[in-house]
Amino acid sequence: MQHKSPHEKSASAKLTFLVLSDAEKPSRSFKASKFQLAIIVLLGIVAIGGVSIFAMIYTPLGEIILPSYFSTQAEQLEKVRVLETKVDAVQNQLTYLAAYNLKLREALGDTGGFDTNSSSGQQSAASGTVAQSVPSSPEESEPVSSMPEQLPAGIDVNFASDRGVAGSIFPLTMPVQGFVTRGVNYATQHYGIDISAQEGEPIVAPAPGEVVFSDWTLTGGNTLIIAHPGNYMTVYKHCERILVQVGAKVSRGEAIALVGSTGTTSSGPHLHFELWHDGKNLNPENYLLTKN
Image 1 (cartoon, rainbow, N blue to C red):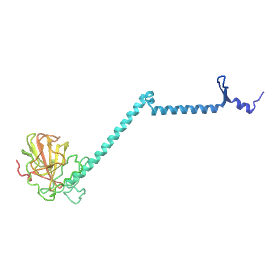
Image 2 (cartoon, one colour; image 1 turned 180 degrees about the vertical axis):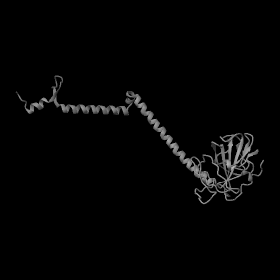
Image 3 (spheres, rainbow, N blue to C red; image 1 turned 120 degrees about the vertical axis):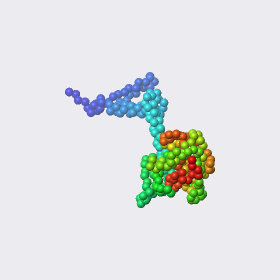
Image 4 (cartoon, rainbow, N blue to C red; image 1 turned 30 degrees about the horizontal axis):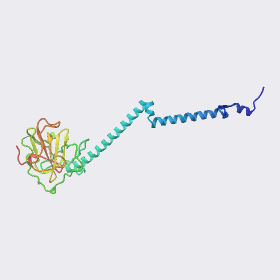
């Protein structure tokens, strides 16, 4: 039996490739083992695949070959952009509400501290409402009403130079011509008086001041808040229309709104009118110049 030498075995394990040419150029040949050939083929496949992926990602070729895949990718990117916009909007709203909460507490005289030794100074905190201390009013210890949900930042409720002068805005004139149909009742959390009047009747400022809130609230409808000298504030709810904007300076007797019946707690045309001083809820009937 004839045995092949190692050299012959190595030669037989290689493949010979012949490159034919025309008559002027001699033919060429080269040899490669099966392993070398496999490496060359693998590298070729990798190179072709890389070029194809690059072309599909960075050229319009991908949208032509796989339109459904790339359209889905575009939709997902758009959803991500929308979600980022919503997150930014929520963050801005939280910042806005934090500024409102601080301004409103300052406007109502709340320093933010908890007085555990005072029987009349109790504080409560609830989601979506402002925590507020309850000091005694000149008449009696009175609860605190929930205030509107928005207050623009930058409003100085203590704008008046004579803010420390007690009684500087009194007497108050009637904010609307009508009849008082309901008074203050703390048992039912009614923190003002209801003045019945015709719808569309002008509401006037009972004293000079500055508008610190002018917007819609769920229960109060179109609501207006005016800060007055001496740390007094008046609140007007259920208005059909508000005639002044935040930051406006108003004088006594100036039309500020129209009587309406807006808000979930209104059952007919009337003005709900509240009076506050340093966080204390006062009975407006004790401070009005005239009362029908």
